[in-house]
Structures are given as structure tokens and as C-alpha cells.
Image 1 (cartoon, rainbow, N blue to C red):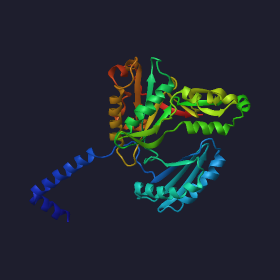
Image 2: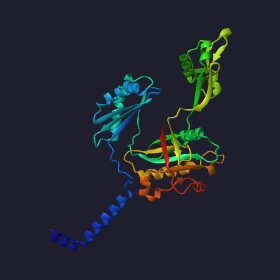
Image 3: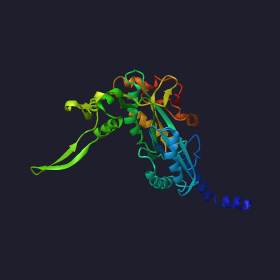
Image 4: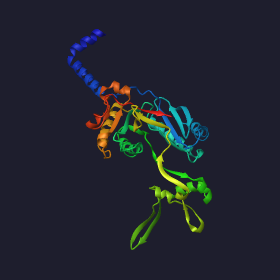
Amino acid sequence: MIARLIRWSIANRFLVLLATLGLAAWGVWAVQRTPVDALPDLSDVQVIIRTTYPGQAPQLVENQVTYPLTTTMLSVPGARSVRGYSFFGDSFVYILFEDGTDPYWARSRVLEYLNQTQSRLPPQAKPSLGPDATGIGWVYEYALIDRTGGHDLAQLRALQDWFLKYELKTVPDVAEVASIGGMVRQYQVQLDPDKLRAYGITHARVIDAVRKANQESGGSVLELGEAEYMVRASGYLASLDDFRHIPLATGSGGVPVTLGDVARVQIGPEMRRGVAELDGEGEVAGGIIVMRSGKNALATIEAVKAKLAELARNLPAGGLSNGRTLCSKPPSLLARSVPALAEPCSGSSSTRRRLTPRPPQCRQSRT
């Protein structure tokens, strides 16, 4: 058999050479398009349901949210295992499917069964599907630093949440941009119980007044002089004074009692349950890039780095061009696997010179 194959190859040298060139070309094409990742994605096909139930204890979350969801998801077609976890104010349900299941088909089936459980959940519980990613989809990190001290953590977090996050979501194969660190600004109303008692105003009445004051509504159209005028009531709260002027009741002599009369209204940070810090030098605000399931990690990282370099030129003025750095790194395993990814930061050359030669180590610690 082998002797006949050798004689045939010698007699048909052109065909053998042509087949060799074809195999070589196919090999080059395959190498150029082979996804590069530090760890192969061997995770199960899964869909995550996250339900926020603010201010509730884990046992209450388990009884009212996690248990109804897990029992309903047991009948999802193709589901192999359903796991539920209850935390303070949050519920996570993991639905694992059989190997070979299309992830987007699985998400559509879970969404169908999720609609069936809406009536069984508390009104304050808001379920949503997690990103179409796997457990090893965490491929990139970056941190916002203002070394001039002109911007605090709240301003850096606002820049991350309202500018960088939405821009990075446009990068192909990015499933989610998770914000970490910093301070999330919020309007805070601190009620004075003595003043509430004096005016005879309940806590529920204050909540209802604030909720009703922060909304807009329309009143159809009004025709005048062969022209239509749209009637609209604008009532969104945009400043501290808007909160202070919310009417709560009518006092003696017809004088209105406002929110500013019974409470202190201020802007403060949201309660945090963890921090993010960089290289042991202090707290930072930043984000985590999560890649879609089955995509090319190397191509996604390169696209994110290019987008960050583009966004670095659009950061606010005020000395930030020389003081702020967009420090970013891929996971260390992938950086060691592909040396070209080991660049410590992306941004202008003046920015990179401010950094130490070693790549930054961004990590999140929880309290």
C-alpha cells in the first residue's frame, strides 16, 4: 500500500505539489483566524437571572424571589441544572443547559419562562438577564486616575458611568462594561422625626410626594389660530432646590409645608459594599470589559485598547491631559501568553511616561 502510494506520488508530482500548496495556504489562513485566549472556554452554556430587591435580607430574598424563580426554571427545555443564590438585596439564578445548546436559544427560552413568574414576584423585585458571556469573559480592566487632584472619586465615577461605559459598549464583541470603584452620587433626603411629628406628616407621605414630583406628563394638544400647541407638564427634579420646594401638606393659615421644612436635602455618595484600588496607591474608579461568549479575546482586547486611546483624547480639560491616565491591562495569563499585550497603559506618550515600568494590577476588594 505504501509502495503504491509512493509510486503514484512520483508519477504525479504536479498534483502532489498542488495539494501541498493548498494545505499550506489553508494552514496560514487557519492560523490567522484562530482565536487566541489564555484559557479555553470550556464552561457550560448558562443563563443568569439577576433580581434586585433593595433593602431585603437574604432569607426574605430566598423566600420571595429565588425560590419562585428556581422552581419555574426547572421546566425550561434543555435545562440540566438550576442553581439559586440569595444575597442582601440581590438574587442570582443560574440555569445550566446541555452541551451544544445555542446560547441565544437558551436565553429566549429563559425569557419566556421568566415572564410567567412576574406575577409571583414582589412589585419591588426587578429581574433581568445577565450578559451573554461566560465566567472567563473578564478580559480587560482599566482605571481612571487624576493625579492632579482636581477631580474626586465621585466625578471620576460619573465620567465612567456616563461617558466611557457607553462608548466602550459600542466595541464589537463586548457584552458588558461593569463599573467598579469610586463614589456613585445620589440625592439624599434626611428626615427630621421631630419636625414630621410637629407637622403631622408620615414617612410614607413624604415618599409618595417625592415620587409624584419627579415626573412629566402630557395634556394632548390645543388648537389656536389653525395651529396645534402641545401641552406638556415638565416636573423632573434637577437640583437640590427642586427637592426642597416639594409640597407635602398645608399648615396653619394655608402656608404650604415643603420637604425643606422637615428634612435636610443633600448630594452624597451611595452606600458602598466594596472598593477598587490600583497598585496599593489608593482608590480608583474604573471598569471591567466582559467579552461575549465564543468570541476572539485577542481581537476584542485590541479593539478595546484602540477605543480607549481614542477616548483618552476626549477627557475633560483642566490639567487632565498630563495628570490623568487610562491604565488598562488584560488578565495576566493572556498578557504572558501574548507578549504584545503586556503594554501597561493606553493613552498619549506623555501619559505613559508617568507610569512605572511594571503593569498595573487592578483588583477589587470586598468588605
